[in-house]
Amino acid sequence: MVTRALKLAAISAIATMSLFAGQYNQQAEKDRQALIKYFVAKFSDPVKNAARFFPYTPTEELKKNYRPVKDWHEFAKGVYSFAKGPRQQYLELIEMPPYEDDVDDGEELYNSTKGLKECFPKPAEAAVEYPKYDTKKHEVVTLTMAINDCVVKHGGKPWNPYKGKIAKVEAYFAAQARDAGKVINVKIPNAEAEKAYEHGKKYYFSQRGYIDISCANCHVQGAGKRVRRDYLSPLVGQVTHFPVYRLSWEELGTLERRLKGCIKNQGQQPPKPFSEDMRDLIYFLSYMSNGMKVDGPDVRK
Amino acid sequence: MKKTKFLTIAACMALAFGASAVAGDKTDAILKEAMKVDVAKTCDPQKNSVTKLLAVAKKYNPTAVKLGVEFKRLGMTTTQYIQETQKALKAKSKTVTLLDKNGKPTDKKVSVDYAAERACKFAVRALQEYVDAQTTYKLAIPGEGYKY
Image (cartoon, rainbow over all chains, first blue to last red; front, side, top):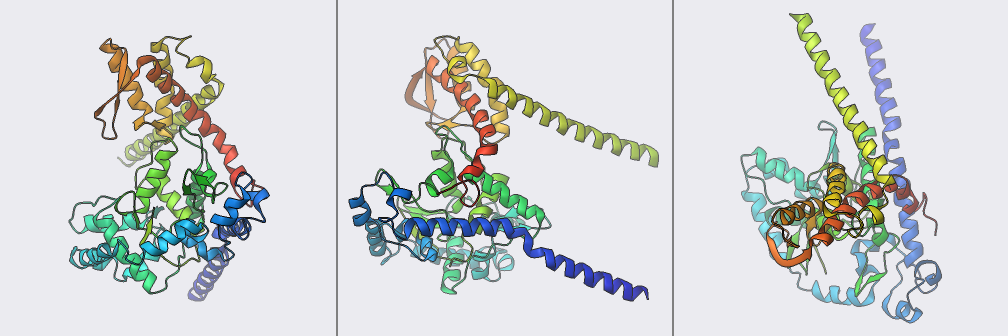
């Protein structure tokens, strides 16, 4: 009798949990859809929609330099999705990608570093598994953090979270995921994770620093506009291609490194690589790229 | 024995909760004060002494650091602007040497007035921006406050 009652209770609990499990990402999904709608409206016909989205850009420039983007998956390529000139340069550049040796180095590191194979038995999966909300630790864990935790756990010293070995291992994971056609699929499993997502979102949309601008000023409202000769990339698709080989760095760098630079440009002391601000920001950004194929490592200006 | 243990734990918990509540109250009070500051007037070196400007900076900047919104300009944080200006005052120098990203002195110098003004403005503005952002951030989100 008691056993039956317990079984019934367990089944009811599981049913209730599964009923509500999908609800923690409701707001995130709403945000993602709204952003996709916004960016598609903005870039589907820049000339026709100039008054709405590019009021200060001359029509001639819009006709000459912009290509229409109707499929939001194309935003995985950042500015190369809509900016004709940079896109051409990019296509020429990736004929001989400068990060190829790094991917090989990453594979070697993966095979030779104690513990990595145990922690990440499927490299392609690792690239899309993170960032994830760790329900035991009650915090967001990024890939960079997970790799470093693993290295330390197996007796090694922590790696530089911005470049070098960690970026190379991530490049190997990303390349494996790209070859396997993996798609970004960040999950929000519970109310705490939802809170972390909201925190990351708030960080992204809050004005800050000496210049008093938010990330969104450049990458939502400002996406597609120019800062001198450089175009600003859209928020959707911003994490698909990491780790990235930036021509200005002349080497591979992690997402944490790119964000650090971005926040410094806002005129603020950037958060530490494994701080709550940084991890939640990455969580938010990654959710916004859900449904897009992993496209890393890649090259950016 | 059990009773003593229980009472100790209870006291520790009460202290911890109390301390965090007081810390929260303190932050709120500083934020409220910062919102009332007229940055242009308060941080004007023509109207106020450098020492006064530094006092304002030292009052508000720790909260900016705590909230993760400390400014950084020309490779220097507000904390570094405060420290380097204090050093210059102590050495009776009229200029402040700017530091590089590793905290080492560069060959760039600015006047003490300028550095103190920056420290003061940065410390207060960081908090004012933080408070403003609590409500304005939603206005930038497509699907929420941002209309296009």
